[in-house]
Structures are given as C-alpha cells and as structure tokens.
Image (cartoon, one colour):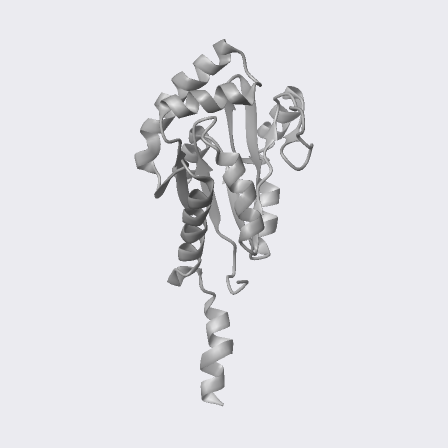
Length: 209
C-alpha cells in the first residue's frame, strides 16, 4: 500500500454509545498500513483501559499547556473533559505513508474542516435512539443523569451527519466493519492518493528502457 507520498486521515465521529471506538479498533486489525490515533484526555481512566493504548491520560494543567503550545491538531471539551489529537503523532505516521483513523467528536471534526484539513469524514449512527440508550445503560459506567446528558447531546450531534462524507449505521458489527473497510479501500484507490513517483519508476521509466 505504501505507494503514497503521505498517509491519509479518516476522521470518525459518533454519539457516545454508537460503537465508534469498537469499530475503529477492529478495523486497524483488518486493514494493513493503517494506525489508530490515540487521543489525549483529562477524563478518568476506566477499568480495563490502558494508558497509551486506549487514551493518553493527563491532568488538566498538562493538557492546557500542550494546547497553549499548539501541540494538538484539534481539541475540544466533551462532557466536561478535554480531548485532543497530537499533531506530532499525526505528522509522524503520515510522513511514513500510513493512514490514520482519528476517533474524535463532532467539535473536533468541525475544527479540522475549518482548517481545511484534507481527510475522509465518516459518521457512525446507532440503529435508533432507543438502542443508543440501551447501550449506554449496559456499559454501567455512567449515572442516569450522565446518560440523560449524553442522549441530549447525541440528538445535537446526529444533526451534523450531513457534514460528513459517509454514514455507517452500526446495527450489525460485521456489516459495519465491512462498510468501513470498503470506504478505506475506495479512498486509497483515488487518483490523488497514488504517488506519481511510484508510477514513474514502476511503469514509465521501464517503458523508456
């Protein structure tokens, strides 16, 4: 796959509980030469999460200092906690030709679009609000009040789906992963993602010989 001069970005957003993180982590094991961007966050580490694998957990003071130094390509406050994407990590992987999946909320996606950052924007939808509420309850990580706030925010976030390039309805994990993989493979085949130097070396120079 590494025929590209620079890796592409796949920006993925969804309301909390839609299964976005599960899809992103599964697709990395399915598709070669793609990496998952690990966000920085100030929220508390949940049981089973690994620092540096699921998120990089930092204090609010550390996060704000990083933001002030311009170390985030985007950052936002979500449910009272801060989340940000490391500019250095993104540039490093892309320079090596790897594609990157950015698991970010709608605020972060809006920031990237506003900065004219090239990428493929994908929105993950749950089958219904009823199913979303069920999933949030089954996680058993939030109080009823927090779940109520998440559902209210979900309604606002879902309205932004029109700003994205693709929509995946996550009612069946296998089917959603198949659609996700298809999007990545289709985007990789776009003409502007093929390295002209590779074309020259592999085909045109050999023709001249």
